[in-house]
Image 1: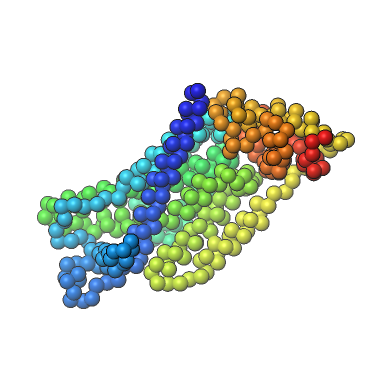
Image 2: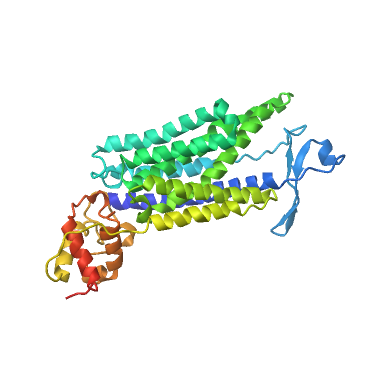
Length: 399
């Protein structure tokens, strides 16, 4: 029952994380679009005299809207001022809770791969937590340094450091855990940008105005920079969120490079849209993204590793015995593996029909990518993988 409740809680937290993430990403995309789409008001107009730097007219949902952005701040603040922060906080808190429930509480299964590094639970969790905190400290320091005044160079350096982190995590944690902690590190940077830079800066601007002082424009400039950074972080994070469903990415021998290529493609595609919102159409950026994704598709094409020779015909009973010993502890209606309450991905392998139904999936995950069993916790052998491969090659029959 405890394991079931933990699984159910994980489902609810994942649901919340997706909802909050949609709200945060939606507002990020909208405001970057809005900022890039504003036009200066006509000289001498009421808007120009009020200090409006840009405005636009839009129609949506049967109504007309006229958003305006001030160069620094309006002459007086309205009584009601909307803040955009809880979407970010809810996304990070739910994502971190999910990280704890799925990965940290099952570190020996979900994070540790003995073929990469033998770690205790606390070592694995400590590495994951340190990557999140350390990423923010380094990133924030770079933004506050003289390098922070050169956005293109800063972007290259941050991209290089995140790639270096992916390489290092790939040398210590299992592939899925390495990927998800890169995502958690970027997510931590994004929410810290909101909580530590954007919101405090906006508060200082509001406080200055209420005290009758002109706000320091530096706070708006810093907030804008970090907001743009968050906008470019979004697509790589979204890829990482779905990557755990595609073993060909995180199980690759150079998974860190696969992630770097995917992220570079995502940034290039995002840049195309940001430029497009400014009225500049530059097809080279989606073209670059398409080429990078094409390279990844080619590079991650599975290549079957050499397997021992299997003598004689393989029977279904042999395959079923292997699956019963190595897979059914998790992939059954009532898993017996510690901490697993539901069969992962809903895959069942406890009956002949279930095995037949999932034969190709079994081959892909156990033989081709070798990502299953996770961390090889049930110690399947290469010969047993070869038996499954031979059975599938012979038509995956019950005989």
